[in-house]
Amino acid sequence: MTSEPHQAAEPVRVLVVDDAVKVRDGLARLLGRLGGIEVAGVASGGREAVELAGSVLPHVVLMDLRMPDLDGVEATRRIVARYPGVAVLILSAYGDESLVIEALIAGARGYLLKGAPALELAEAVTGAAAGQSRLAGQVTRPVLEKLVEILGRERETRRAAEEARNASETVRRRQQQFATGAMHELRTPVTALLGSLTTLERLCPPERLEPPEQELLAACTRQTRRLARLVEDLMVVAEEAGGGLSVSLGAVDVERTIAGVVADLDDLGARRVRVTAAAGLLALADPDRLAQVLGNLVRNALQHSPPGAPVEVAAHAGPGVVRVEVAHRGPGIPPEKVPELFDRFGERASGQVGGLGVGLWVVRELLTAMRGDVWVEHDPAGGGATTFCVAVPAVWRD
Image (cartoon, rainbow, N blue to C red; front, side):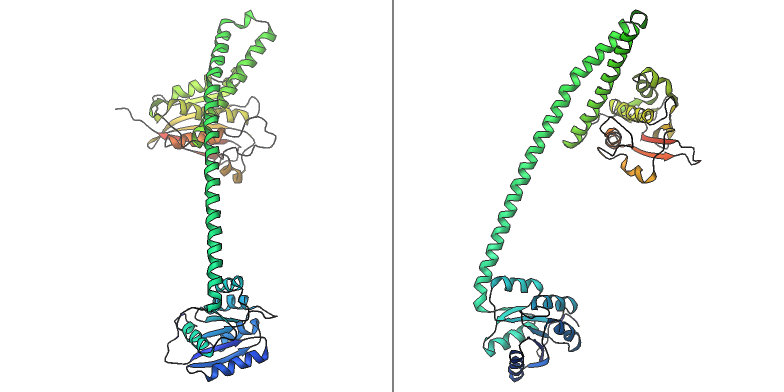
C-alpha cells in the first residue's frame, strides 16, 4: 500500500478490531450506517488484524487495546511498519495517559474512548484517512500533563548530565595540571642527577674504583637514564591530553641525531647498534623530539632482540623525506598485532616486564606533530627481521 492520504471521493475502508464479539459487531453496524465509510473487514485480535491489513487493504484500522493474543499497541506497531499508508485509530475503554502515549509512540494516528458519539467517531475515522490526528477530549489534558512531566524530567536529566560533565571536565583539567606540573618538577632533579652521575663517571675512571663500586655507579647511571626517558615519555602523554603537542621545527642533522641517541645508550647497548647513515641528511623536525623518537625505537629494538644480536639503524633520502629504519631480529610481530603497537598504554608482549607501554605511542604522536609517519615492515624473505620505518620531511640544501 502507498502512504498517500485517502481522498474523500471514495468511501473510507475500515478494519474493525476487537476481541469482544458484541462490541466488534456493533461497531461494524454503526460504521456501516455512517455515510462515506465502508467496513472492509473485522478481526477478533491483533494477530488477525495484522494479517487482514495486508489483504483487505483498509484506509483506517479501528483498534482495541486489551486483546489476549496480541495487544493493540504491538499490533499497531506491526501494521504501521508493514503498511505505512494505513492509519490506526485506538478505540479503548481505558483512558490512562500512559497507554495513550504508548499507543501514539507505536504509530497510532489517534486515541478515542469507547462510547464516543457516532459523529465524533465518523469525523475521527475520515480525518485519520486524510492524515489528521484525533485525541478524545477526556484524555487530552492528562496526556499533555504527562508529556509536560516527562519533558520536565528530561530537562532535569539533561541539566544533571551537563553538571556531571562540567564536574568531570574540572576534575580532568585539574588532574592534567597536576600531571604536567609533576612531570616538570621531576624533570629538573632527574636531569641534575643524571648530569652528576655522568660527571662522576668522568672523574672516577674504572682504574680508580673497585669492581663493586664500578657496577654500582654504572647501575645508578643506567637507572637514572631510564627514569629520565620515562619522564620525557610521560611529558608527551601529559601534553597530548592537555590539548596537543608543541614542536619547534628546524633543520636537524639526522646523522648527528642518531649518533647522539647511540651515545646515550649504555656500553653494551651501544656496541650492538650498527649505523649506516648518509652524510648531510637534513630533516625538518624538532631536534629534541626527533631524538626522543629514534631513542625509543632503538631501545625498543634492543629490548626485543636476542642478547647480543645487532640492531641496524639506516638513514637515507627518499622522495621529499628523510627515512630512518630501525631493524632487529626479534621474535617477530603477528600481523594482527601491528595496529595495536602504537596504542597508548598498549598491551605488553608475553613475558615482557617493565615499562608503561607508551614508548611506541609517543613515537607516533611526536611524528604526527612533526608531519612525519611511522610504520612496520617485515622481512619478505621470512628471515624474522622487523623494521620500524620513520619518514620526516626533508630539508634540501641550496
